[in-house]
Length: 158
Length: 198
Image (cartoon, rainbow over all chains, first blue to last red; front, side, top):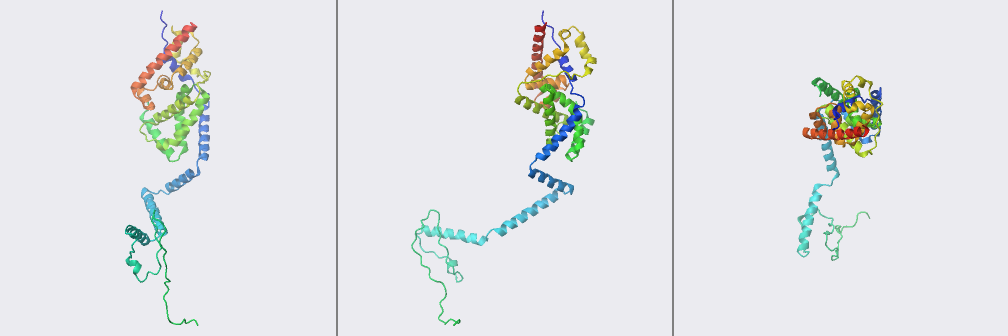
């Protein structure tokens, strides 16, 4: 004779009566609160700071446009700051130019090449020797003549 | 499973929680903890583990509530967190379990199904109900986590297949299939127990 079937579903439904002890859910609420407070204390400082900034802005009811304006201001100030700190653009251009000239010089058997700036009257300081990557530093000696103007007048200090 | 007014009330509580009103979140805890407890307890079969998990679940829900988009109901969302966290916990936990049926509510004595089960000519009549429930819990623990989750939500909590499918992120067909397999396993286990004691 086959075994009669047990009504599994009916038996399982009886498990609904398995309840936690009385007062459990009140204690659970307290435990969750305690847990939330503990988690707040464990949060990293930067997160707390970010939250405070967010709260500050939300308290002052700033709209999306205000955030956008603030962001634009920060970007402008940043760009201006970077612009002030970097050297002038002209210098960078002339160094590129120099590099190109030097390259030509190197490929043309180191023939002397003068640029207009070098022969101008205002240019008194000799330019620093150029060293290209991979170029040998051994060069023929360079003699620098004193660039002070010679005067035949007696010095007035005597 | 959940009517419109209840859902509206939840939406309002969620909005208040997001705005920083902690009491609104307390109301959600009070509202959903009893059902959530049933789910987690029947997954773990242990009150202490259930208590720890309940705290973890609500803490996680509080942290993630800003990411709740309202595509599903809060009820589905919190149950999804509960099932996933319970399954993860069970994967880590050894197969230890403590069954405590001392807390069975006295209301069971008046339950229609309880009366029928103990009065009709079934194997249950001969067995001590407490012992049978204990065996049933043991049988539940023999099920895989996924099968146990389905049995818990369908048979014990009375959720419809569609709701379970949403919570588990699977199809209704899978839910039905798991349910069928789980029932068969439980049936085999309890019949074997009855035969051995008969």
